[in-house]
Image (tube, rainbow, N blue to C red; front, top):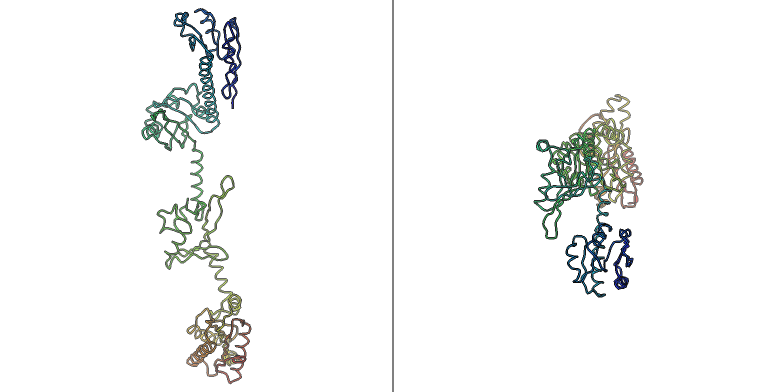
Length: 530
């Protein structure tokens, strides 16, 4: 990633070392530039990374070269036994001593060690640049501490939070950096120092909720702290990353207030429908399961509710209009909405429980009124048409049509009140002997009783319907409401699944007509084409 030009200055009377170094292959990311001179030019020495002295020298020359070079430059002195005394007196002023005799292999080896060290320094410097760039680019507070609690490195966000520079923070402890006195720390809700001790003791990554005072205001942090180990596995210190969640927690508080102030129940789930949040109004609905509600599957919650239902808590109703929860004489419509995250990706669901008790009962009352005969409270003709439209006509379905004989004359003679009393009495006879859902008033004095198909033999269904007709006639005679009042009945049965209700009605109507023509107060069965 980087490229480093290593400039080498050789101060020598010959070009032997020059030739050796020029034959050495450079290490990765390094380039060598070799310069040899017999004359020492002190002014240009600062341009070189490595200076090799291989000529006659004195203590004065060594010190002058030391003063002229850059502090990070590597100064090498080549010496034989004759100059050892000078070298020993000036060992502080050079970095390496190459002792003679020097051959090509030895020179290449010693030079290789120097450039390897330069490359490691470059790699180390680049790694530090990586680290500083990374931590300074993050909005979180990041710091490194030694085991005593002194700050070794921090990022820009940390400095901005404490109002100090990196130089101010370097090597300083908690109280100075955060401008807090030990007494104030002891009295407050601070746990920063204690959490450091936990990490050092347990030697593992830990997450803490920490309160910090910044510029006379209190802030809440989610802080991740990890131990730093040396090569032997001993703890050197800690590294911490703190995220300021004060605004987020304030927002959560505001959202909770809003959540609880909503006039309807709310349940939030994750994308797998595990409950993640509820408000009090929804808790009231599921009071029997309020313990451990969080984490439960929403569908399992509804199923458990349905299983626990009593007469006061009825059922879960799923219809074309939505899902309704009937609970404690109240009706709630359950509305499902998808939750999306900041990337507009699906993240979960939110379920709203709207109290629609009034609307629900009004609608069902309207439906009931539209399908119920006002006088007799039996199903009306419209209800029968809806039933026939939605129900297949199976083989063995029987239809009984009943018409009160002489009803018009009685109604005209005794009045409508008396006529209504007769209709209600006859409706009670039908209600006492048949399922209410199968009884219909078609209008006036005409009634119908439907026997849904059971795929029994036609003759068996005819016998059943005929027996029921005799019961109706007998019950009406027992009432003795009027001497001239009786009932004529016509019965028909489907013979196959291919037959429809329209054909069945025509057959029953013909049988009813035959009953009227037979002197009334009787029952006729349609047998034509059987």
